[in-house]
Length: 441
Image (cartoon, rainbow, N blue to C red):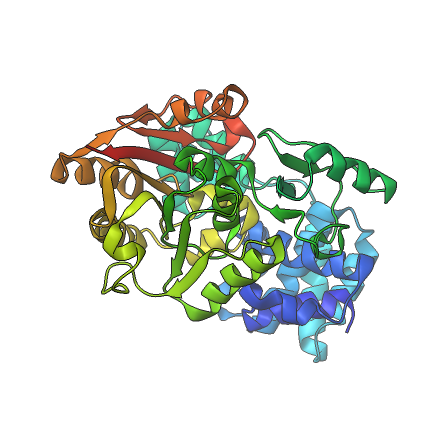
């Protein structure tokens, strides 16, 4: 199939989450185009549908799914890709089988092309949420949350940032190589990279297939955003300690902790899902960390008896499952999949996880709680409730656990409180995170 046919199939089948299976037969520029068509059409869905509705003489809900998704693909190409209109229209029309479908889609797309760039937006002062929803293509509840939570200016910038392409950032395995060595090796292969914002991080300046990068198979680096690196650094694992990574998949933070421990001590990684636990095992094996133990289990339920769970841990990392609103730019479909009604149940589970894992923390031990979302309920509300019910947990400023270079990412955020800091995407240029730290008295 052509890139457009593959993209059409992915969107029509609702297979955005498993798109890799569809893209497998494509290589090079063909694969890149298919990925761009899927991610871009998904990202800009709200705006695209508004454009279609203003040019079609039918309600969108009445359209056959094949017709609607073909129109969405075509409008995305016309508005965002700069492909010649005749090519965008003709290749889209050819995705359809029937003459009637083709004629309707052809007419709508040619109408869109004639008035390209003319879209009526609500007033940003009179209806800021409506403006953000249409201008940046968001569901109403997320746009409202960003604006009410962080103010009009920051809320709009957060929405805009979520539409930026996410760079590829690598964390170098310091036990095998150095950042300078990795960058020099990339340069010899014609791969343009620069030092990232956290010590040991590398940012690729041009898209590349990570698994084909020199050094990937040898475990010289892992893909990890700078914000996620800060979480492990706040944990501050040391050689010889006992450390538990609670919700460990896909394993980026686990390998970081293992590197910090220099292969000594006890490192336990758990995940509730067996397939995801296998991802952690694979990441550890590639990085050469053979001392870590990976277990499948629900941290709110019974845990293995004996060993570290009897003795307790010096440090526990709970990077909790969350709504993910801090990583929308990496998951364009997330904004449409997530519901506001999901938040209370997520917050409840996060509270249960915190209460459960704290039982295994030794006296004097450190607990770090983190999420990659920006809701109050999942972050400071959950954290402060935990502190209220656990008076032996003394909050500590996460920034004080970091070196000066890394701490700058936390210092940019005006949102902080007892033991917690936010990393806001539009201020840091990296993923949105909430990081909290406390020590058991």
